[in-house]
Image 1 (tube, rainbow, N blue to C red):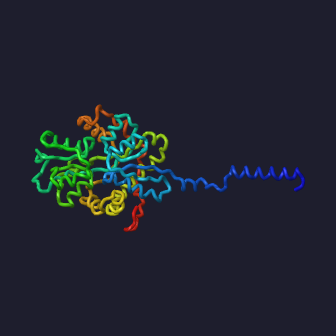
Image 2 (image 1 turned 90 degrees about the vertical axis):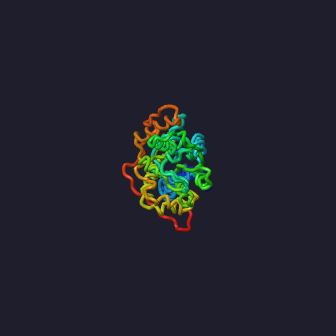
Image 3 (image 1 turned 45 degrees about the vertical axis):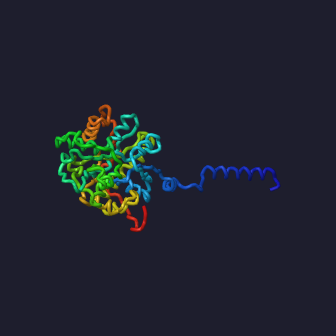
Length: 344
């Protein structure tokens, strides 16, 4: 080691070995290991209503998936959700269809990629009132979630069908969670809302069903899955995985309704008995199949929104609906139910 030439040679060799190690990074995880450890994550917005049930089911199922991890983000109202989307802090969410159309009209770059459900809304009246039709509510107070809701559009359709003058009923906008209490206190006489806020009045004995949405508008659509065009452009594989997850979660929920109630009630922060009632009484009260939107039904909603003053101009839904991510075949999601005392 006394030879300078030998020391120089050994130093150069050590340097070559070190540079090789730095380049190869043998301590780093292999590509497949990195994919498993650092899989992509996406937040998906939802409200605690059965129209959005497939969102928490997809969240739960993706916890053990090797694909994208979908983290459901719970909101309590649509205005907050909309502002989160507009600010760029949320790229995927469930929301009522007319509101998605209004966002598009306002220039927010969003697309409808899938539906949240079919049916699943109910007209409830006070149990002590001898009401048999909408016409019997003349002079009464009727609550709807908002002017942007599909419930508003359906009631307008029903008034036309039954020849009821809109001026004969006093319509008020009210947050859905407040409706059962308002009915019980007789502050309102009827309301139309997505579940489980209708079933709550049934179970506490203050209200009864006047109409199910499916009886007024078969295959009724209230909520849709909205994604931003930015997400589609930058992470199309994630969007495809999300739509597949929602579709497969819906198929699972159709055949595992009591399990679905147990699974989502902690996400909803609602009584499991209430959610189970909605999903089983009757079983077709809300459906999670046939969730591919077609242009005719979406255009009908848009045109009704224009007539109702929700939209300012006619919207061509062909620029709003994007079906490229919908799977041709829908399998049932593989869901391993948690222990009865465990939380999702």
